[in-house]
Image 1 (cartoon, rainbow, N blue to C red):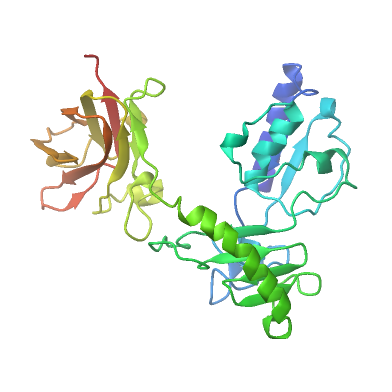
Image 2: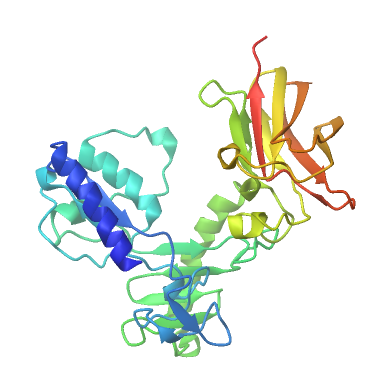
Length: 344
């Protein structure tokens, strides 16, 4: 995998060279979470240390609030902007800091009304001796690895400073002496625990009020049709079918898409179990669709590669449910559904 990534980053760099864009392109390489399959772990698979493979001496893997679950690299290069000198920075930062950093590097203003949570680290990139852009960071996996609902205060959360980590409002680790997070020192540092708890409170107050489902636009002129995938079903608990390892088994489960009908009118919904690019038939004998208070049902012709419904919808927010039944009556959802606003 490392060789594959290295090869493809090389191809990208070669293309930038060929287009004459290398000097004035900001090139970023980063990842999205701790290891998933790069190491084997102990009995507590999320939170133990690696027993085989490589995890840089960190405890925890993807979805863990220990360091190995969320600490990742970020490389940034911009020769024309003076960012090609190979400095290492160990300041606390996160994905939400990337947007304000790029905006500052490019001289793009962001309206104060946007109320960004991120903080630019552009000054630190330009001058490694610059002061850190933030003194703490909150990491919280809302709902945890298995998306327990509803998200709760302090659940699957950690407060980070350069030296300290407070996990789930209880465990405390001194990263200067214990980067593997083996020794909980909360009992001997109550003042530190208190200060880190105080940092968490405004974070929770800010995000808790905004933890409402995101409604996907349909009928927008910027994307018509809108292609919906079962990864965005809003399940009460657990993961929906979100990868092809799961979807190819046609799991007998369905869930709703939270959608926002941007304009009233007639819509066409095409139900499939695989994306249209796969060119595969629908494995079902009967289909139905429910959107708001409206329901329709249809038989599925053998060999059909999509089941089509049309419905007149009012503008506003609602839910879209899909059902595909096999000959035994077992039902699952249409894991891929295209919703198209039709011309009046």
